[in-house]
Image (tube, rainbow over the protein chains, first blue to last red):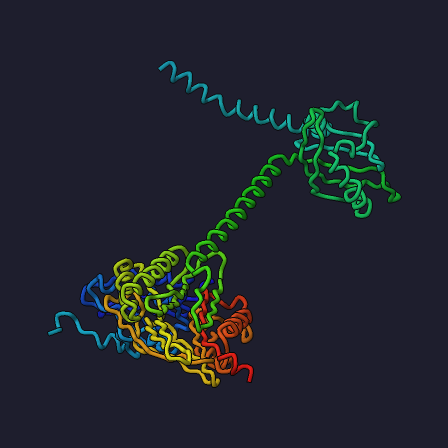
Length: 120
Length: 423
């Protein structure tokens, strides 16, 4: 059973991955397999939009951590957008709210990003 | 030139010659008599009287069986051609069904050949009736089913092998699971202990673990945790986590230090595209006072809060805010909390397989959740270690197949003094 839909789009700030459905053991491989194919350049920001995620367990968290490792390896940033309340609670419990920067929407995440050249 | 000329003239004549050959071949087909078709058809034909006596049989079937026509026609019945098992089936099923329906098709039987062999066949029979509707004779076609039988045998063999391998896998999984859990929990003076491990799938090893073990100077260590994911890769992390925790606790029993050590080990071992981590709670138990009871320092790395079920029936979540997953970050923050376990108090540790179970009752995939567990614990308190574990076990049973992930439960309880119970 495949309960997760994954959509990717590209913005000047970097790729945005939209996840819809359940992020668990059965579906997390979809996210992890997608990572190497993402066009992510140094200084860019990978945004994972969680608006439509109804469930996330430890395997889902693994997928997000794999995304983080992928971004860091590319010398890019990662941000989570629209973290649903139930996910927020889990993230808080496992201390990941201190690891990922979060934004209310993907647009807000994009707006918060500044090109490397413009940085001090 | 000469050769090519001859070839050319040969080519020139070819169309006429080819047309002639085709015509001859076609004629041969037309000349193929119905009798020849009957005799040498690629299947066996057999006509019997209503009592089974063979009236007519084609050459194909005679060749398959090795019989002469004279041995069979008017002398033997169709049943005589069958193996003992086939004959029994023919008498009890095939023939009665044929009488009732007037037709039986695609029945697998075995015929005996004169050299003592067996020929698997598929048999179809129809009853030919006269103008008045009375049955006259039975027409039977016999198809050679050797290839099909070989295929079926092969399928059956493959299926049996798959079943054997699945059983072997389940056995291996169960064994591997057992090695990740203590065979029995040690006896801690003044403490009742109970644990339960719920296996969600016999195909996959889960990543939950727990242990309770003695440390120096009358103190005890306990831990319960959950490695992300499942299967052999998760089991490897579980094993590493378990032994690291035991070893680290001997070296420095401070709970935060124990989890820091585990964090360092896992972080060095697993990084990059396949991150592995665990949530874990580690407790150091120190007996206190003459009245019994224990001081417990708990350190948590991103694990769901333990529940403290007091003797007076109240329930507290033992919060350890800010504690982070173990193994992901080079310097994970580990939060600690200290609780006192007095007579009649029960501390309940669990993994999120319990709170993330889908509820069968609602049927809409709603997860059980932390709040529901808290309510459940309030209804349960005050309790004992074994009663608490039994209650969780019953609760898990109500979820049925709604449990995606393994669940581990560990409960410790300071029993009330016996004289108090008698009062």
